[in-house]
Amino acid sequence: MVKNSIISINSQEKNTGSIEFQVFCFTNKIQRLTSHLELHTKDFLSQRGLRKILGKRQRLLSYLANKNKVRYKELISQLGIRKIKTR
Image (cartoon, rainbow, N blue to C red):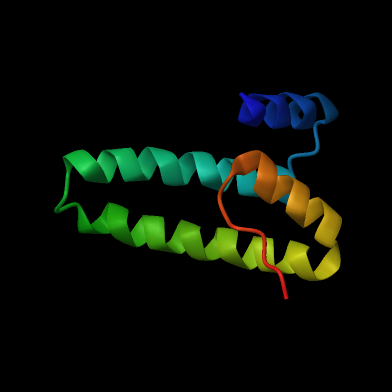
């Protein structure tokens, strides 16, 4: 999987503060919470946590899109989480 290559590259560098690594971690958390919420539909605290994590990831991605469009497009294509914006 492509996602595993991102984590292995970043874990070897010990650069857990990079935007790519943070977005990758948030994406994993989102996937785990989504699968949890499919089983437990009335778990409202997990729904709140999911919304907070989605907001954090959205802010990081918009920051990266403004700072470095090349890195943003690479990350989006590797994780497959958004369509690439074209203006």
